[in-house]
Length: 176
Image 1 (cartoon, rainbow, N blue to C red):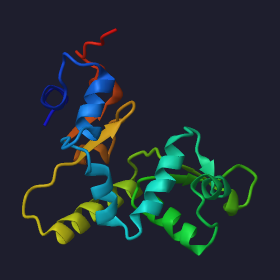
Image 2 (cartoon, rainbow, N blue to C red):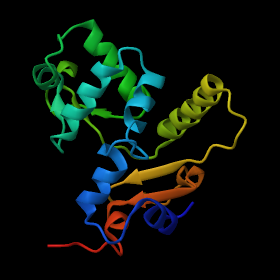
Image 3 (cartoon, one colour):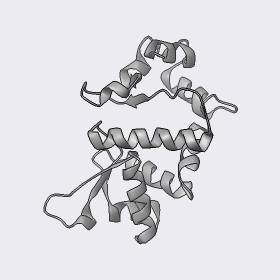
């Protein structure tokens, strides 16, 4: 499934980008309206808390510290938050990196990623878990949706297709 198919299939070229997003995700009976919640509820118990963390991280590109996450999400800064952050990092939804010169408690978390050996292993594990949980016998396709695309490398060959931000704007007519 290439980017042209995705744009042609999901986007109405006579509508603005914002209107297309509204139609895909927010309109009653929209094609992808529950995809985000469905994914998180399939993977995590108490998925609302995981969603709160990811949504908080999405608001600040450079990331947030653990204490900032707790403050923004109104989640207690305790073992439950530790578990949520570890699970999100382990599943590849967010990444953690040390805040230079600070203790591990001040680690930054971001919702960006890079395909490394570790991430490739996590993707394989996710696909295996998904196959087990859903009991699907169908082939799984790995499609990466990123802002700027993927760098070719040893672990990017698993990706069957990618969609980048520019693809969403390609041949989309903006009105007004």
